[in-house]
Amino acid sequence: DIQMTQSPSSLSASVGDRVTIACRASQSISSYLNWYQQKPGKAPKLLIYAASSLQSGVPSRFSGSGSGTDFTLTISSLQPEDFATYYCQQSYNTLFTFGPGTKVDIK
Amino acid sequence: QVQLEQSGAEVKKPGASVKVSCKASGYTFTSYDINWVRQATGQGLEWMGWMNPNSGNTGYAQKFQGRVTMTRNTSISTAYMELSSLRSEDTAVYYCARGIRTTLNSYYYMDVWGKGTTVTVSS
Image 1: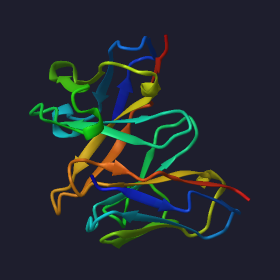
Image 2 (image 1 turned 60 degrees about the horizontal axis):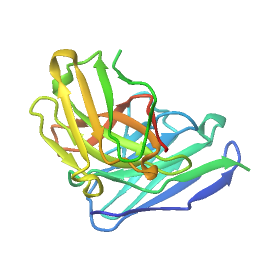
Image 3 (image 1 turned 180 degrees about the vertical axis):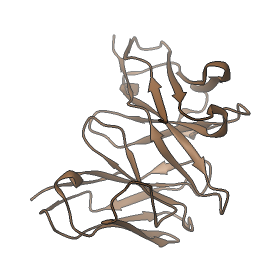
Image 4 (image 1 turned 90 degrees about the vertical axis):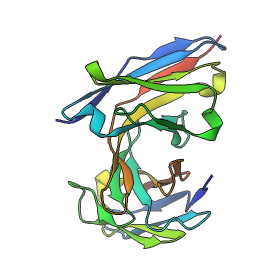
């Protein structure tokens, strides 16, 4: 199985900050990488697919980059509604795996 | 609008089985995969498997092989996930999610999620 890691596991930030979350795959997955946001008690929400494609309806302050094994999710200016946990997920093969998550909370 | 409606909470004893349903609406059920993802309290997301509602083909995470079965009833646009030999570690929220594969490059992602079904395993 392809293993996914994320860093940091948590971070504290203020409204307006630029936030970057890293995701690494245990082998090359090309651009088969998705990002999801999850708020407490809610289902995950798709933000980014294919490493850098913004899902319809998602604010443009979210962006994704990377290919191969290293990927990044960036929030250009953190908003109050962005405090949540973020997960990366690989879809390189048909045995999908999620990263452990990065919790973004208020500084 | 596109929705996935999941069945209600379940309480099961260790060793029993649970069957969770996921009813699709607002789109053609057989045109997209259904994935199942679970999350124990305070833990991350764990992908369990996928099913193609058109063919019935499935793919399961190795961890659940032999214990999980994903099926569907196309006449009522409903997918099912059955997990057997339940143990306390299976206590979690179980989500169904629609899977989309793009025509170009076959990128795959889960764009619509159900609200989750809580399964509690307790003696």
